Length: 95
Image (tube, rainbow, N blue to C red; front, top):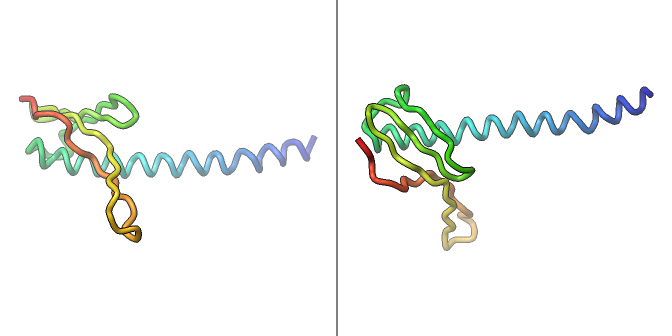
């Protein structure tokens, strides 16, 4: 019985750590999105709300305006530079 509990804990701990890492990563992506949207919408980030549309698209609303953003990956010609990820505005600003 004890070995089963121990084995379960060894399997569960990495999963929980992965969830924590995922939450931090999503929070950072949202922070980047709010920074970008605050500029585009001419609205303080504190007044913006994120609406998840799909896994790669989010809407941002605030100050009477709204916009849609897409999470993209841009590859560079240089193999050492790697890929760059960023939020790209995918709509005209409403409002």
